[in-house]
Length: 136
Length: 208
Image 1: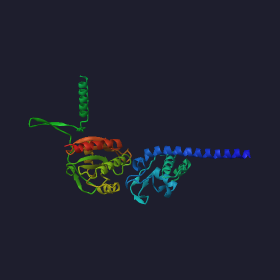
Image 2 (image 1 turned 90 degrees about the horizontal axis):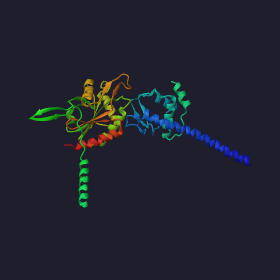
Image 3 (image 1 turned 90 degrees about the vertical axis):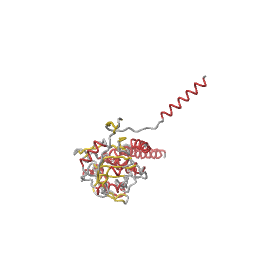
């Protein structure tokens, strides 16, 4: 009886520490992502991510993360966007330059940050970012 | 006796405080020349010369359109991926603040006039929700625009194929008074610099 109790405690402890380890990593990604966002994205999309009028679409408070696949998100950041894109039902034209200097980790961090700001508390794994960057 | 001293001191302090709070005046920037007129020496301040360019509505805009207005000028191009968005974010602050003030105008010259034809500027203006005559986006002869930028508004701008976007330019906002004199230059990419610009615009609006 006592053993089971200990086991349960250990089990719980294990689960909790596992979770928090992952959560810590997510938070690290998010903080790094915030810095990278402010350096590479905020110029146009603004510090608060709300975009600029009808010129630059919002990336926080946006439906993009529900509609656009992860692969497309990675490619959008890395290679930019030409032609129109619809965000929150509104049509944006013009283009977004690519961010050639950003590596897989930068992009994973930016996406982790943006997902968090859009209410999705999940890490964007580095491996996923790497995988999509190797596909054209 | 002591009482008198205190009185004097406080008088002096008050006087001092008042002289300190004397209204701030804006400098005249650029080269000054002097001219003798009726046996008096007149100072002639650096002045923005006449110009004529097309705006986003394909209307010719010249200095006449800016008569009796103070205005803020900057240089940009619509496909600029670097500092222009920041500058436009700040310029929109001015646009919204002075939307109903007929004494204030905004002028943005494109440094990529070959691409930024009036129709391109029009689309850009529409997306920013801005309108002439409050905010004119101007295009025209490239050389004339660059010369005006460097010689008159004291803003650096030039083509550079190695630069992202193909042009280098400073993010400066130049403040011009009703007599076409340059009264201030600010970093239009920084919100606190634009706060200072707004303070100076308020001073300039009160100037006779």
